[in-house]
Image (tube, rainbow, N blue to C red):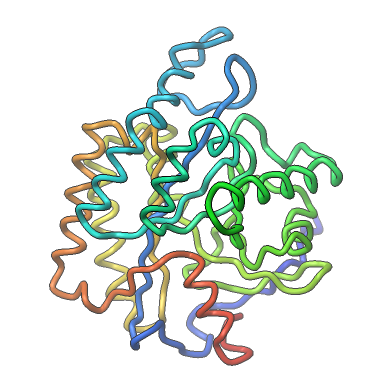
Length: 297
């Protein structure tokens, strides 16, 4: 069997790469990503903590809607308490339907990442024209409501077509977060020139852990702590990126919020927390782009 290859990037073992540091000589970059997702009623894709119901499936739609009505505001308050920034993987449809959400994002000066129009569809099923129009419309909507256009993108359901990186580069995006292949940024090829891949966590991520694998919130707390402790040690060898991914309707449930708060308490109270660069994917991308050529694989 001949294995197909995407030709977007070459193999690069992490221990053979040039050394670099994050700002102020730090070696571990830390960010928190909040998925802010909107869904069509009675149709399309949707997360679920239980079995799917027959359409319109009000139980699961209502559970997802809880994240935007209740969960996100508790997450905002928790991050305000810790003084931590967030990046928001934001469905553009949220902006038109719930303008108070982008307003709070602007008040916090948080970063916005393009995340499609809604999470009721995957762009992987779109033809080139449809996907291109969706990217443009989502970008324009986010720019109008959030004060500036996004330069980073992660597709709904982390899905792509074979030409998604090309379309994103052509639409002015400078980095993407769909390829969880590394603990460092790396360059990817597109037909319009290079685009950067910034690490995004699919394991330190509340949705697959607690919805797909059915692990309890206490496991997620311990996973965050263990990931932080181990990456802090590993960052002595190479500069790394440590991200935590949350969803409004998962992390926003009170019993899960408590466990996440305890994990963040552990991180910010850590005696070596001053060694950590608390940042956003956009800042990681900008710093990486400015490194000497050949530093980022």
